[in-house]
Length: 214
Image 1 (cartoon, rainbow, N blue to C red):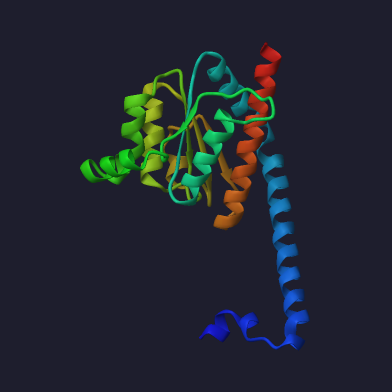
Image 2: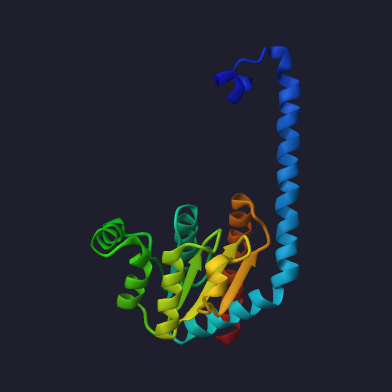
């Protein structure tokens, strides 16, 4: 069984070159896929990303805060985005941002007492105002708690941003997202890589817009 899953562990020294060649081909193919998808996203969504960046900059300039949220790998991405806006370093301005997945005690309390579907909506109801921004991240677009968070943000009058893949799922159907960016891929890995790029472009757009406003 081990040999079938990890053939390189039992390969003789003479088999090293074919194995390395296979790994190199696989890596190069994945790199091509990543670059091609990012170019496609730029072509499809360039104007949308620019409009989203402008809306975020306007909200930040008016004193708004960014709340990010997602599940699993998207939770990690949400925390990375919040950290990027809050503490960008290199002389860039920090902007108020918070990931709703960062407080484990709060997450487990809400999950235990109310239910996981409401874990983001309840936080936004308590913390958010109409001046703020909500960014929900999901590879499928079908995460119920993310969709409910965006719906609560819409109810509050916040700027809502949704990042999804695989057609957009419920996120694309809920009518609560001002700026919806659906990555045209069904691969979780490619979707998350492209979403990370989109988030960095949004951050750069916000920084440039705020610099011009000064």
